[in-house]
Length: 289
Image: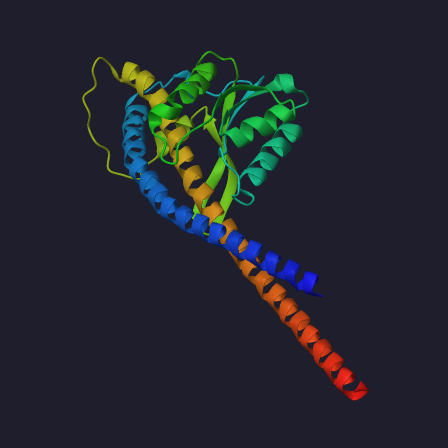
């Protein structure tokens, strides 16, 4: 009985230490989430202004024939998936990677029909283990990545499309809805919908002067816009990652608290049984005398 009580006390101390760690990780994730949300919001005005310029160009040019605005027969597809470098974030990575695997299995007959660009160590390791065609990866990003950190892979993905190495590019990431809800989604990044630009009347049309010409400015700005969308998705993914980790650590803390309560009750019952047994032995010994 004494040995059992020592085991229970040792288990309680272990759970208390675990609870301290998960509580600290929850608080750190909450602080990083606020910062990630600020970065995500700060990146939106630039993308919005680029979009405004593109719409003005598309509406002001009679014949928009840039390859990034033109659909072509799909022979090969590109996917850019944004995961995290670290785990302990609930279903953040697993749900997104499951969506990717289900998508390629449904859409393609063989690995020759698609290629994958991946951001994040978890995604790169998972996809390589499954033998999927990962052709470029970026890992080791910090908690507050800059555009420079992912410019190489974003430019490569956009350039591959421009060179017709594949005919469409999809972006997969976790969309941040709120602190307790993140949704893995797939969005077509390329080709950009020229009809959408041409018909957008969401803001007042602004007159710009272009040098050297509207067509050349459009050719220069479209790749930057696509790269900016990738960066915005990364910022959304970072906010989702910290929110998922905060929720996971909160659940772990609650589970540890529940286990500690159960073990404490078990310890008290064992101690009461030990005391009762000692009293019975004392009474039995006194009666024998």
